[in-house]
Figure 1 (tube, rainbow, N blue to C red):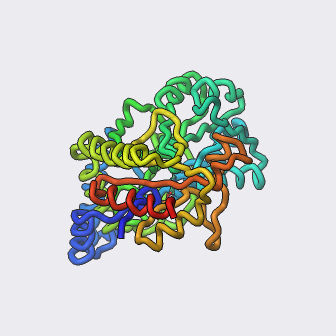
Figure 2 (figure 1 turned 135 degrees about the vertical axis):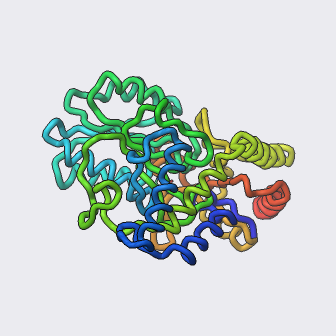
Length: 373
Ligand code: PLP
């Protein structure tokens, strides 16, 4: 079995698992309790937050632990938009966001009368200039991803953040696909919100965090004063601890890991070229090397997916699967148009530093068998 769907989720690292089990076994207290069991739990929580803040160069109190990327995106977007709607009701995002951003914004439009502008890629890119052109005096929030989950395309978030210094709109970045792959320095980045999810960097599922600078926003979950009164509910301590361990591990020697993944990617592509396999890449530069979004002319992605699955290889189309059927990708539609054959031919191969060269060789061999026969 070969797992090449790391952008969907990644296997839990051994160190994260060990950290998780240790907390589950040894520290069951509620961090909000004042007795010794509670204090032991609250110490772990405090230390985990501090370690995370150090990794990201921000203040401890700017980090809110959540249930993952979807919740973090919802909290930043709904929380900020609803708290600031008296200043304006215009939101800016891109057409290539994850559904946890797009659907949240749609909800604000449908139920609260917000207006949204969707930036579409132009010549294969989203630019800060496009954000500049979309800005209005009543724009209160800009939300863009850092790297696209279907193609790995890296958006110019530093430039967008820079230009927003001259505008009162807050800036939210969905960094779910980048966290753990590239170092993030929040002081330098200067964004207001940033979302992350542990299961994309070898941490457990159902845990993540939102970085929120000292900006005012409504909470989504009411009922307790946890997370500095910004997210009620007893913290998932074991998962939080495991997440921090996984992030430390991912960022340790991150350049070596990036180089390794780049090498694996090049290996797959050069083998396909050598064997004169007809393929195209759906890519925009710059991009993370982890994602190979690739199409094979006249081969439909659902049949390819199925046949690779039968051969023990897990990949995906990158777009949402609903009730077992593959919806056409809104990301590829934004890049290539809704009628492009790329939408039905493309698959996403997503790598991690835990994949090996042997796996790449076997994958290409199976792929060639399927395409040839
Ligand atoms: N944002 C992006 C870019 C993603 O790729 C994902 C997950 O695929 C999410 C948000 C949602 O994260 P989670 O699965 O933790 O809710």
